[in-house]
Length: 613
Image 1 (cartoon, helix red, strand yellow):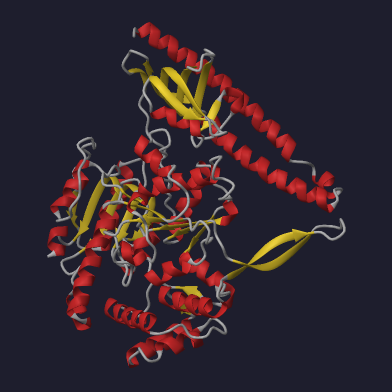
Image 2: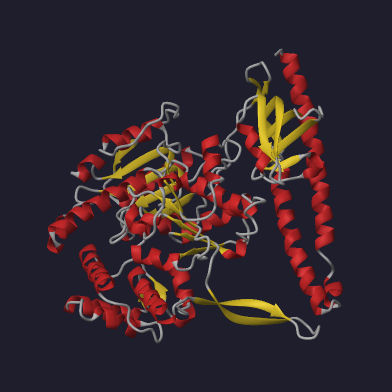
């Protein structure tokens, strides 16, 4: 292909892109005018009309949101087809994140979109009516369009190999969201996303393998695809995330995939709502309690024994009285004193919430939650009504499932609609950073057939040098040959948090773009860092455990010292526990190391190898 031919194709594509974007803009304005009526007109409606209007308005608002996302990047694949049914009919199909039929743009979840993985030649696809059509693909074009700008364009024709038409340098926008993979998706990934929807499904893999992104695209498919959308409306779906940081992370990402009205919650937030223990009663969630790792671990072990050796007590109301009936026989005097302090502080942890939920379920046989709805009597004005209904989700997603107690997962499984039991587990059994969590697939409490248990092995997030550094510390990691080299991992000796803060400030000054994650093993150590960088939009300070599930352009691990990962104290709790704690520490460090996409900096009084001895 000559330079002139490439320029002609690029000019034609730019003209089409401009025309499509203009039509999308007009469609947005049309949707706004149709779905948004003056309040005075709404006030004159009778109740039934108002309910219909509110429903249509929600549909219109969702479509406006899709079109606004589509405007910046309308399509990423174009296929020119000739039907082989004798009609000789030609089809121009474009595939994007959402459909826009005025310009023959089909959503990536449509059955026909699977042809984007085929090379020019004979292809077949399924119509919305379930019919199989056969065609000859004459041309396939792939694009990357960012904010209306073509940054990549490749073309492949029947009988000719793929050629690059245009490419320009592009730096991905930095933000607290996962990278988009729809356009770069492989056929195997697409098959995972489109796998049959009934029954439990699991996606696991090491940090940076894309498991979370793949799982959320499966959620997007289930909630939008023509053959599954009716079973999985957003308001009947729930995504459980590990903490509020990850909740914010997902809240930004899901609308980008067209997922709306899906509840995103932590286990603690959901449990307290289900138990009717809202924050205004003074209750708050704590990850651990006890003051110091030895006390915290001893206290958690005592609670774990109580959870697994006690039968659920009869539920009258949630609270510490119910918990005491489970704990009394299993607590020693020190544990009882801690429980008294915990009660005074009105704190609850994952063991407490799981015990209360199990008791509630054993007594009531179901969970209920208060929902708001509107009703009208004889066409009168709409009135808000609160009612309690059984909790039953059509789709339950559990992110970082390896950090859940098996008993907590069993509680969530009881909330899945029984006919389909659509549970989606996402995580990595090599990243268990809490006590008492699932040890293997058999502890999930339900059978997941091997063909519905997808294991990803390759890591795409990190650079080659970061993975080589992790491997040198004794971790078994696969390093794909295609990974970019990246910068050397820097280990810098710093004698105090003050020196580490000065290093981070220098990094901020010399690196003008990208998020920096400042991670430490213990929350107390991070206090001066939180205070120093609390107004910075580029620096996120968190513990290693809190960082699980997120990523940063640069990661700075602080507070490294020779005894940081020592398990000597754990011997007091038994030799088996010392081994468990050592494994948790290694998993915790692995989580921290793998948060870095491009640069990794390790600061402290010694090297990581010395800290791990």
